[in-house]
Length: 193
Image (cartoon, rainbow, N blue to C red):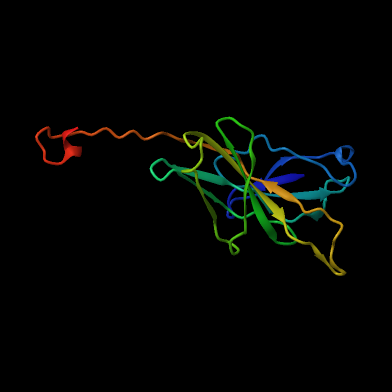
Protein backbone atom coordinates (compact mmCIF):
# COMPACT_ATOMS: atom_id res chain seq x y z
CA UNK A 1 0.00 0.00 0.00
CA UNK A 2 1.58 3.30 -1.09
CA UNK A 3 0.60 6.54 0.66
CA UNK A 4 1.41 10.22 0.24
CA UNK A 5 0.79 13.61 1.78
CA UNK A 6 1.73 17.09 0.65
CA UNK A 7 2.10 18.94 3.96
CA UNK A 8 3.36 17.74 7.32
CA UNK A 9 0.02 18.33 9.05
CA UNK A 10 -2.14 16.67 6.41
CA UNK A 11 -3.18 13.00 6.69
CA UNK A 12 -1.54 10.26 4.64
CA UNK A 13 -3.72 9.35 1.68
CA UNK A 14 -3.55 5.87 0.11
CA UNK A 15 -2.72 6.18 -3.58
CA UNK A 16 -2.31 2.60 -4.74
CA UNK A 17 -1.21 -0.97 -4.23
CA UNK A 18 1.59 -3.08 -5.63
CA UNK A 19 0.96 -6.79 -6.03
CA UNK A 20 3.76 -9.23 -5.11
CA UNK A 21 3.93 -10.30 -8.78
CA UNK A 22 5.05 -6.72 -9.66
CA UNK A 23 8.09 -6.90 -7.37
CA UNK A 24 11.23 -8.02 -9.20
CA UNK A 25 14.53 -8.50 -7.34
CA UNK A 26 13.09 -6.82 -4.23
CA UNK A 27 12.31 -3.58 -6.11
CA UNK A 28 9.30 -2.00 -7.77
CA UNK A 29 8.34 1.29 -9.39
CA UNK A 30 5.14 3.18 -8.81
CA UNK A 31 4.06 6.33 -10.68
CA UNK A 32 1.67 8.78 -9.05
CA UNK A 33 -0.13 10.23 -12.07
CA UNK A 34 -2.37 12.42 -9.90
CA UNK A 35 0.47 14.36 -8.25
CA UNK A 36 0.72 18.06 -9.13
CA UNK A 37 4.51 18.06 -9.26
CA UNK A 38 4.68 21.57 -10.74
CA UNK A 39 2.79 22.96 -7.75
CA UNK A 40 4.29 21.38 -4.61
CA UNK A 41 6.47 18.75 -2.99
CA UNK A 42 5.09 15.45 -1.67
CA UNK A 43 6.05 12.98 1.06
CA UNK A 44 5.67 9.27 0.28
CA UNK A 45 6.01 6.02 2.18
CA UNK A 46 5.20 2.37 1.60
CA UNK A 47 3.41 0.02 3.99
CA UNK A 48 4.06 -3.70 3.55
CA UNK A 49 0.99 -5.81 4.40
CA UNK A 50 0.59 -9.52 4.99
CA UNK A 51 -1.94 -11.74 3.17
CA UNK A 52 -4.65 -10.74 5.66
CA UNK A 53 -4.08 -7.01 5.04
CA UNK A 54 -2.35 -6.31 8.33
CA UNK A 55 0.70 -4.00 8.34
CA UNK A 56 4.04 -5.80 8.59
CA UNK A 57 6.55 -3.02 7.96
CA UNK A 58 6.61 0.68 6.99
CA UNK A 59 9.25 2.43 4.92
CA UNK A 60 10.85 5.76 5.67
CA UNK A 61 9.26 8.94 4.33
CA UNK A 62 10.71 10.23 1.07
CA UNK A 63 10.14 13.83 0.00
CA UNK A 64 10.12 14.90 -3.64
CA UNK A 65 12.08 17.91 -4.91
CA UNK A 66 9.95 20.88 -5.98
CA UNK A 67 11.80 23.29 -8.28
CA UNK A 68 10.76 26.88 -9.01
CA UNK A 69 12.54 29.19 -11.48
CA UNK A 70 12.29 32.97 -11.76
CA UNK A 71 13.53 34.69 -14.95
CA UNK A 72 14.94 38.20 -14.53
CA UNK A 73 14.88 39.67 -18.03
CA UNK A 74 16.82 42.81 -17.05
CA UNK A 75 19.70 41.05 -15.27
CA UNK A 76 19.54 38.10 -17.71
CA UNK A 77 19.56 35.59 -14.86
CA UNK A 78 17.36 32.65 -13.96
CA UNK A 79 17.10 31.95 -10.24
CA UNK A 80 16.41 28.34 -9.28
CA UNK A 81 14.98 27.57 -5.82
CA UNK A 82 14.21 24.06 -4.53
CA UNK A 83 13.65 22.17 -1.30
CA UNK A 84 16.11 19.54 -0.15
CA UNK A 85 15.42 15.89 -0.91
CA UNK A 86 14.50 14.07 2.30
CA UNK A 87 14.37 10.39 3.07
CA UNK A 88 17.69 8.66 2.45
CA UNK A 89 19.52 6.84 5.20
CA UNK A 90 22.47 9.10 4.41
CA UNK A 91 22.93 12.68 3.23
CA UNK A 92 22.58 14.33 -0.15
CA UNK A 93 26.09 14.55 -1.58
CA UNK A 94 25.29 17.18 -4.22
CA UNK A 95 22.70 18.40 -6.71
CA UNK A 96 23.15 18.23 -10.49
CA UNK A 97 21.45 21.05 -12.37
CA UNK A 98 20.35 20.24 -15.91
CA UNK A 99 19.55 22.97 -18.45
CA UNK A 100 18.15 23.01 -21.97
CA UNK A 101 17.92 26.04 -24.27
CA UNK A 102 15.32 26.70 -26.97
CA UNK A 103 13.98 23.16 -27.09
CA UNK A 104 17.37 21.46 -27.01
CA UNK A 105 17.99 18.49 -24.77
CA UNK A 106 18.71 19.07 -21.11
CA UNK A 107 22.37 18.55 -20.24
CA UNK A 108 24.24 18.78 -16.97
CA UNK A 109 25.00 22.46 -16.47
CA UNK A 110 26.25 22.75 -12.88
CA UNK A 111 26.90 20.83 -9.67
CA UNK A 112 25.82 22.45 -6.40
CA UNK A 113 26.56 21.50 -2.80
CA UNK A 114 23.46 21.13 -0.61
CA UNK A 115 22.59 23.85 1.89
CA UNK A 116 22.32 23.15 5.61
CA UNK A 117 19.43 20.90 6.61
CA UNK A 118 16.03 22.54 6.21
CA UNK A 119 17.27 25.47 4.08
CA UNK A 120 16.08 26.11 0.54
CA UNK A 121 18.68 25.57 -2.17
CA UNK A 122 19.32 28.49 -4.53
CA UNK A 123 21.28 28.67 -7.78
CA UNK A 124 21.49 31.77 -9.98
CA UNK A 125 22.12 30.95 -13.63
CA UNK A 126 23.71 34.00 -15.29
CA UNK A 127 22.73 33.72 -18.96
CA UNK A 128 24.11 37.14 -19.97
CA UNK A 129 27.10 35.75 -21.89
CA UNK A 130 25.14 32.88 -23.40
CA UNK A 131 24.82 33.16 -27.18
CA UNK A 132 21.26 31.85 -26.91
CA UNK A 133 20.25 33.92 -23.88
CA UNK A 134 17.06 35.09 -25.53
CA UNK A 135 14.53 32.29 -25.50
CA UNK A 136 13.32 29.30 -23.55
CA UNK A 137 15.37 27.85 -20.69
CA UNK A 138 14.28 24.56 -19.14
CA UNK A 139 15.71 23.10 -15.92
CA UNK A 140 15.50 20.18 -13.56
CA UNK A 141 17.51 19.33 -10.45
CA UNK A 142 18.82 15.89 -9.52
CA UNK A 143 19.79 15.00 -5.94
CA UNK A 144 22.58 12.43 -5.60
CA UNK A 145 22.79 10.37 -2.42
CA UNK A 146 25.90 10.59 -0.27
CA UNK A 147 27.92 7.61 1.00
CA UNK A 148 25.94 4.96 2.82
CA UNK A 149 27.42 3.97 6.16
CA UNK A 150 26.60 0.53 7.57
CA UNK A 151 27.72 -1.21 10.76
CA UNK A 152 30.79 -2.31 8.76
CA UNK A 153 31.73 1.15 7.45
CA UNK A 154 30.99 2.86 4.13
CA UNK A 155 29.44 0.52 1.56
CA UNK A 156 31.61 0.87 -1.56
CA UNK A 157 29.42 -1.44 -3.67
CA UNK A 158 26.09 0.41 -3.60
CA UNK A 159 25.39 2.89 -6.35
CA UNK A 160 24.08 6.19 -4.99
CA UNK A 161 20.34 6.75 -5.38
CA UNK A 162 19.06 9.80 -7.25
CA UNK A 163 15.89 11.84 -7.01
CA UNK A 164 14.80 14.18 -9.78
CA UNK A 165 12.71 17.35 -9.48
CA UNK A 166 9.95 18.59 -11.72
CA UNK A 167 11.02 20.27 -14.97
CA UNK A 168 10.48 24.04 -15.22
CA UNK A 169 10.75 26.24 -18.32
CA UNK A 170 11.05 30.04 -18.33
CA UNK A 171 11.41 32.60 -21.11
CA UNK A 172 14.12 35.25 -21.31
CA UNK A 173 12.41 37.92 -23.38
CA UNK A 174 14.56 40.49 -25.18
CA UNK A 175 14.34 44.00 -23.79
CA UNK A 176 14.04 46.83 -26.27
CA UNK A 177 14.47 50.39 -25.03
CA UNK A 178 13.03 53.24 -27.08
CA UNK A 179 13.70 56.86 -26.12
CA UNK A 180 10.50 58.66 -25.22
CA UNK A 181 11.90 62.17 -25.54
CA UNK A 182 14.63 64.05 -27.41
CA UNK A 183 15.62 67.68 -27.87
CA UNK A 184 16.78 68.67 -31.37
CA UNK A 185 18.34 71.93 -30.10
CA UNK A 186 20.20 70.36 -27.15
CA UNK A 187 23.93 71.02 -26.73
CA UNK A 188 24.38 67.31 -25.83
CA UNK A 189 24.67 65.24 -29.00
CA UNK A 190 22.90 62.14 -27.54
CA UNK A 191 19.79 64.24 -26.79
CA UNK A 192 19.46 65.47 -30.41
CA UNK A 193 19.10 62.00 -31.94
